[in-house]
Length: 151
Image 1 (cartoon, rainbow, N blue to C red):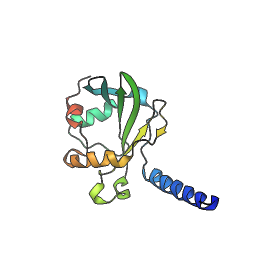
Image 2 (image 1 turned 90 degrees about the vertical axis):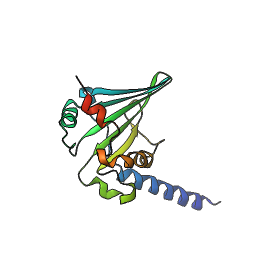
Image 3 (image 1 turned 180 degrees about the vertical axis):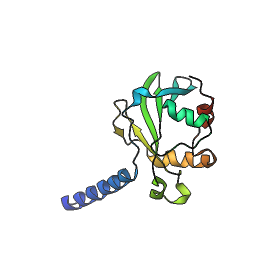
Image 4 (image 1 turned 60 degrees about the vertical axis):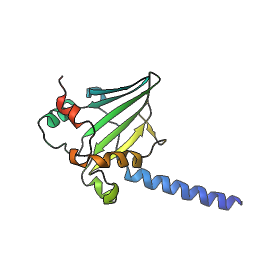
């Protein structure tokens, strides 16, 4: 394989990754210190912790829709150590970035490492494929836990 062909393939792969990155708008919340833990899911040595802002939980508890700008954070623990975060963020018309059969409304998903930098070992389409089954609950699996949250 020639150097030019390798360079062309590398450019193509980078273009694909960049294109995918541009359609994923979820960001880690700068105010994460204000988020509260509203649910924990224990799975042996592994667990997941769900976080949201108190005002997000109040909206959910009141049965109101979560507005654009809402972020939910999932901390994933493996072997009793924090391994990564996943952020689910809602934006204005973000659903237009995806075909209807894989859309999760206006929610986008992103994986972050423990230093809160973007990680790309898991891809948003995995999150979308699972969350798309929850359309009746605004694509949320934890809405019942949000509504039941007591500070």
